[in-house]
Length: 281
Image (cartoon, rainbow, N blue to C red; front, side, top):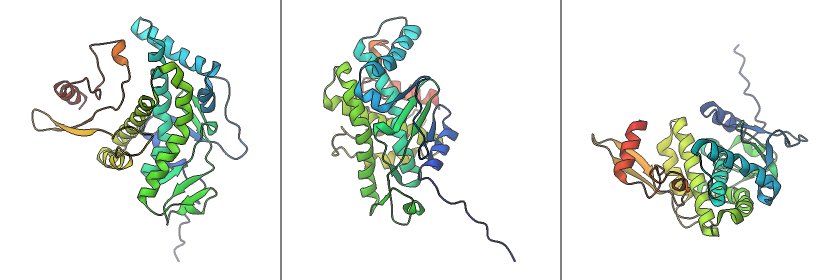
């Protein structure tokens, strides 16, 4: 008689998603903290709540960006430019803590700032998940902290709320250094949500699905987010379809290299975008 194979019991709603993320993107390793385990401190680690509070922790975090600009570009950037770079380098991976489990497994963890720590040099993050949303029928619904929502739109509401819960305080910490209003800051947050998942989904081989999902997630009417993902498709000289998007905010890289705008910057004309996209391909 054949003995049935027992599937391993599900113990975490996010562990598999973070493992898959690390498989395709070696620049980020996410470790879920277990019950009673303390967040790492020292050795280059910074808590997201410390960034949200500003002060010495944020000063030390931004000193890395300042040194990088001086080393790589040989010039001193404006303080608001340094702060914008630092926010991007934190928010891009932080958004993935929420969007990757949603994209892969339809689970949305709540990760307030006090539950996340970041080691930027190593590209490591730790996260403590005590609450998450999922759909009916998900085996994870039996786990502690699960909250079942009725449908996909309700789950998208959970994604938007979870990102806002995490990034809102962080934007408050960075905001005074960035010389931008609330709407511009949330335009940056919108871009980080879109560009991080769009990139990682491409590594999963699911770029088109990510574009569809992100259009539904950010239809342009969901405050505090600003605008839509801005996806569109350009046509190459041989009829190639080349996906691109228009950013909702400016990363300010042009202040260092005026002639070298980002590929998704509204300042970059379509002809230049096609040239870059073909070269990347």
